[in-house]
Image 1: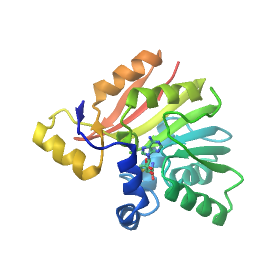
Image 2 (image 1 turned 90 degrees about the horizontal axis):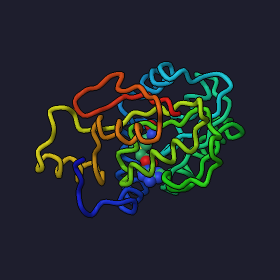
Image 3 (image 1 turned 60 degrees about the horizontal axis):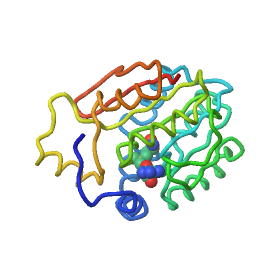
Length: 217
Ligand SMILES: C[S@@+](CC[C@H](N)C(=O)[O-])C[C@H]1O[C@@H](n2cnc3c(N)ncnc32)[C@H](O)[C@@H]1O
């Protein structure tokens, strides 16, 4: 796994609390991931996420992914977790304005240590966000703890592709993106292999980006 010095949660929170975070939202819209709503619905379809289920979105930002799942996949309720207070507040406001606050709540917390009840979710969700988390094994452990034994962990993330990055490229990429490190497919497979008996990945893969669906336990 390629890493960079000097980037941790404080730097990521500062990014999403400031002008750059607002700028990203102007450019991307509500959902800050590649593929927007289409990618969310595609992942939900592949992971069989739908009617009546309860989900947890780790690193949910303003909660747009959750609003999408509640509206278009009839998910019953969702809890989002994000470490940046500014996006949590914005997300709560948007849920209220869109009449979804009774089905979606957002917790201001580190996704590695949410304090949420074990096995309380039918699925754990993440979209292009886990790359920001320095301690990825801890994050995956938390996801596995939260999901029901027959539940699903469905996430997309930026990963190092098979062509690999030189050290110089990695430093430039990680610095520009404010990422502490970037995992690859086999790295994620190792983490999941330690905690989940059965998993499927990847479904699709392009140079940097991974789309995976993992079933836990
Ligand atoms: C790219 S945005 C997430 C985009 C969102 N999933 C979507 O699809 O619209 C990354 C988010 O991860 C959050 N984040 C990064 N590290 C975190 C951590 N350790 N715990 C909780 N949230 C974290 C940031 O605050 C930011 O809101």
